[in-house]
Image (spheres, helix red, strand yellow):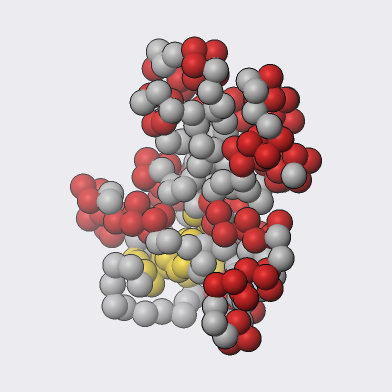
Length: 263
């Protein structure tokens, strides 16, 4: 099987680790309750602090990484973990794009520290919150805030039988059409990031009459500038347009470009 050090008779060693994040993507894995036993039959989970007290520093056949790199210690640790992993998969908006905490990339990091902490000199953090891929090579990515449980199952299934994962890259709009959801932009005149956002959430927000928040980040070749201009025709100011894109995936290039242009 691709991405393993062991013979096929042995279960691949899997680790799940986190950096700066809310643990939501790890909880999504644990929410796969009906499938967890089947997963443990196929994979040997040797590191997953959210689920077990067992600890391992590797080696890992597959290592899932949640969270952005936000401290010097994390920047050092991810390099060490990469050396122990045959395959490294980032999971969630924090690990793939820097997360909502990457809002600090657009502002004065030291000013934030002074405003929040009584002794900011004790806080050892980097000036930026960055995706794992800016520090080490990444073999695969699962997007979302949090990730899709079904996409995690698809990836694990593909790994277990040695095929390429079938993960969608269409816009949320495509799913809305199949579900018969009225278009938020057209029907209500409210902003919606569905035209430029990768599907994976099941079009949750549009299904309840709310505009897409962009949780799964920009799809491939997303024309964010065009959508931002459309928001302007709806009467939104530049500041309001920037706020629409400055959310969970603010540091993703296609979204960050709009935020910086509208500030």
